[in-house]
Amino acid sequence: MLIDGQIVEGQGAPVAVVNPATEETITEVNSATADQVEAAILSAKNAFRDWKRTPAPERAEMLHSFAEWITANADSLAVTLTREGGKPLVENRDEMGWSASCLGFYAELGRMERGRVIPSGEAGQLNLVVKEPFGPVAAIVPWNYPILLLMWKLAPALAAGNTVIVKPSPYTPLSTLEMCEAMAKLFPSGVLNVVTGEAEVGRTLVASPDVPLIAFTGSVETGRNVMRSAADTLKKVHLELGGKDAFIVCEDVQLEVAAKGAVWAAYLNTGQVCTSAERFYVLGDIYDDFVEAFMSETQKLVVGDPMDDATDVGPLVRGVQRDRVEAQLAAARGAGARVLVGGDRSSDRGYFLNPAVVVDVDESMDLFREETFGPVAPIARVSSLDEAIERTNSSDYGLGANVYTLRLDYMLKAMEEIEAGTVWFNDPLTDNEAAPFGGMKASGNGRELGPEGLEDFRQAKHVHIDTKMDMKSWWYPYKEYVRHQAEHGTAPG
Image 1: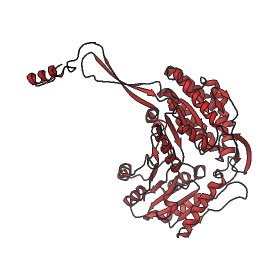
Image 2: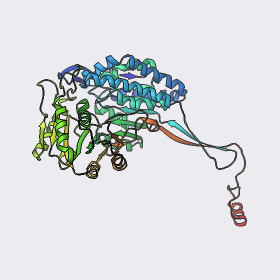
Image 3: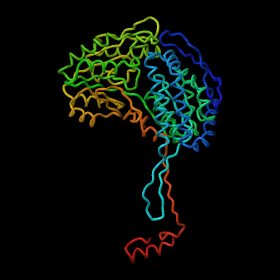
């Protein structure tokens, strides 16, 4: 762990870090005790006094240096991520590039402005809106993109002048811990702290009155618990809580392109992406052809060792996750769904599950309502784009949605009517540091990335300056004020 600029061992219970491809324990990482979590919070609180006054160009240089360190150590970090999380090595190399890019974006955005000047009510006055940091921020990070989703919080938080306490997932702490030594060298003591452990560590951070903002990515139920706990201290919460993203295929698509894009959107990181395509709505004219093309592309995928660059789909992160996916598939079968390919275990070793294609599905099934977070693609036939949009919006989630079409009228209708934080046309799951990411409805609140991501880590203060020290006509006694109004029909001044 990293507390007050020092690398320290956790003094709490050990937690095993398991390789999902082999089910072997890589190592054990000790949890932080409650006292160690409090020490990290105090360190961040003390460091905040100087960090918020550090000139933005200096903070930017540190963020750029961190980006350079990640780039220089990308191969090592990618290997660590693959060993602890099971995501194919090629995807983890990409994650390092995206992470460095995010740091660079906020390094520059954070030095561009600190607020705005607004028109004043009288001559000789100045009105400012000043954007200020909150203080020590807790960043609670999931296991599916441990470094990237950390940077989506860390980069804007630091650029805005906050200090940060990071809690990585107990499944994937090693990549974050690998960065701790660099963090200690690149940033002033206490600006960045890292505490490891399970849910109790997160609960301590959320409950602390000295942590005014919680940035959390994870499940809806845990997000609700974060909000409940945060209510006691009236702190701000920034929640990204997953989704059940729809993928709409219209009749004018190039079938091969749409099928390949759909397969990638469904099975990237073994379907363990909050924006994975988990519900497919295909217009009836091309439904049969699309299902056939989708199955064909799915059967070409290589499932296996995530360290092998020939592998397309690795294991799920843990056995409990695979069990949950298998249970959802079994329930769908029991309700009349058919699994055309996949859905079976590809190995006796590791948490592997062959990508599944499922038909005869609808919203009465858990498979079409609740997040799967696994390699499953349920495909339904719809009669029109209107029906596809209506069924897309019937979900409690609203994180993202994909639409394949070249018809401009379809694009405009889908853009306006789909209830989701991001709508991708013909290019699924593509993020842009300059554009906001986040969900509607049960998918959370707040935004990451873009200028909106920086704003979520700043609070506005109105500053009213009068350059004259003179008497105001509306002060006491009110009788003079009222008399002037009666005589002149207006307030004095």
